Length: 360
Ligand code: IPM
Ligand code: MG
Image (cartoon, rainbow, N blue to C red; front, side):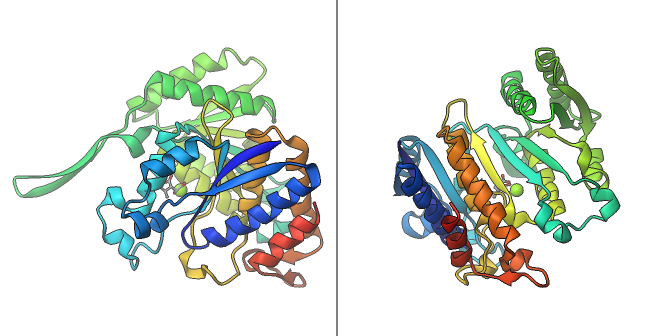
């Protein structure tokens, strides 16, 4: 099969980790007889440096005309990088929000699970870990506070900032349907997270979730308040299968869930619209402090590439092969610095990529 892949290497460790993901994809192509045609797309700081804006219309067009987008990470050090002297809508993150909206990527899937091989890195006590955990956070990605009207005004000499949080039932319904579809292929449980004791948007969220749930009698569901969910994630993470939530709650809870696994460098993500198209990126950030040092863990990006194979290209066998290669390398004891423990073999970014590619 021939596929067009737009590659956003981005900032910080982005170029190194996408290079390794491409190395693995190239091996997949050789082994399974596919051709992937890559086009580099600038976004974030890398685009600001060249074009003065974090995402150009041409970049969006290139992404749109591809079958999928593979992304590294964007952004720099917010206290030292000159990018953060720019007005907010010109900073690196604005590029990411813009591409999500432009491509209608409303469904963000962020798996968080405990790797058997990396159990020691989990910060939770063994009695809390129990048999481990494996959840999928489904975050609504193109609505809510991140896309509401905002402004800062001065009234009677007092500065005042306003952000607005809006959800339509259609926006809630489409991500909810996705979440129930995903749950159906997993352990058949949806935990919908909201703040319905305070917010109108959350009360509507609950109603729509219940309407959708009626079409999925085989999937169990519950509502949970977001503050309780934050607590439950560290108290009993094994209870969760699919967590469905709005944009900002999902942003926060997905960081918490990934940290709880102890291996944020391992976690992938997919942002999907209602076609086969998707944008795939690691769950972690651009880690500017370790950029260019060949120490970053490329596995989250490699696993994001595997999600691309599975969701956008229907290449399940190839995706399985990538995931199995990652597991094998871990079983053989290879570790990047972030997941290193005593008695294991420390390797750099490029070597980790090669080891995984070799095992496909
Ligand atoms: C994420 C990031 C982004 C977000 C930032 C960089 C805008 O934190 O993907 O979780 O908040 O969505
Ligand atoms: Mg985030």
